[in-house]
Image (cartoon, rainbow, N blue to C red; front, side, top):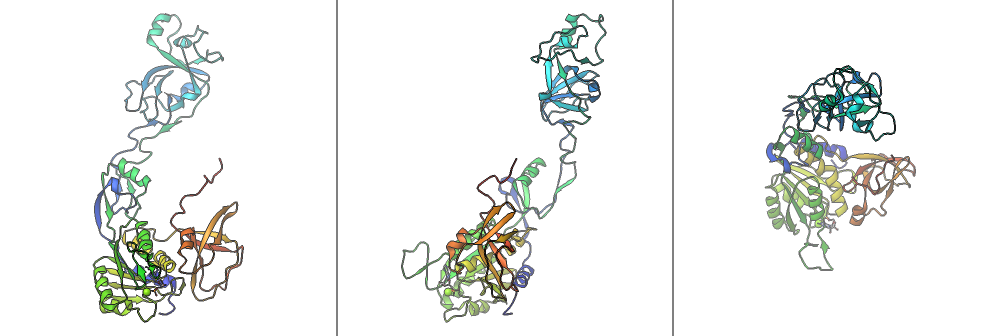
Length: 454
Ligand code: AMP
Ligand code: MG
């Protein structure tokens, strides 16, 4: 028990938690929640072949000999339905998202065409109103009446415009196919999916104005210690400001849960018992301070007296050695170290994965990256060590540099850190240039520059 590894402790925690039941929320409130239902498409998307570009819908076979001049028989905007069928030599002006007319098998984008006057369609004409300096007397596709069958005036009446196309396109060019995005009845989202903005877009596409998501655990946070001074109390130079209540609150909020702060319990068994009882009304109770062995540390006996079954009291890690975990029915309780950095690091290793599991997340662990150490790291074998580091992006990948002194009360270095570099328990130290696994912390999703070259 004394030398429980981090991974073993994590396993004990995760075995003790269950995924919560579901509730219905409005789509507007669903961001960051976890889907508790299978979601299927309720229609084909797109519902028909549509144009991917502003341009002309045409028959690709008409471009066998280019340049070719095609008669424009219709204007189709998004939201319109085509009313005509394309015959050989005909095309329709079409906007992005508009349905393809029957007969069309390709779209050419408007940038690759030029509008010419109807006369360009007449076999006898070489004049055009095109802005182009190139001659517009293109290949005329074969729909036109033979010269002499119709006079120029009636032809103009028939045709308002024509378009000249200088190069061929393949069948299917710039068409978004019916059902390309999703087919009616297809499973598009599965339970356990984290609801990101992209998922919200899909849910709106399939008309889910409400969505079933997993319930979130109710979390209470309690600080303990006679020396602590509440945020709302006047500054007393002899006291220690309560940082843990708020740092733990924020770590919980960052997971999408609004916790309840119970305040500060003095190191007195009766007061502590009162607070703990209140805390055990919640699904998850986080208690900081009082788990180390000391004269005034009553947390352990008081917790046990309340019927909580403790699964561990110590983990072979640094910082965070005195971290405890127990359960009472489906409720769980974490005894986090009083030192602010330790308490935050233990939250990351044990509390966050547990809360995410309860919320139905498939991904419960922090993203890790591999980074190159810029300096040696001394390590006493036996404990997994978490070192606060700054990350820098170099050509060859990321480098990790310690934030400096690693005292477990140095909260400022936690505030600066990009991540926690993990030194394995069996390591006898790492040398500069070696690779280390780094858990990314909140605040590292964004960077200063765009980070890519075009
Ligand atoms: P403990 O685990 O109670 O022995 O506390 C270890 C160290 O953490 C002591 O220096 C405490 O003063 C400090 N500490 C405990 N609780 C808090 C808190 N809520 N905020 C800031 N420091 C704390
Ligand atoms: Mg204490």
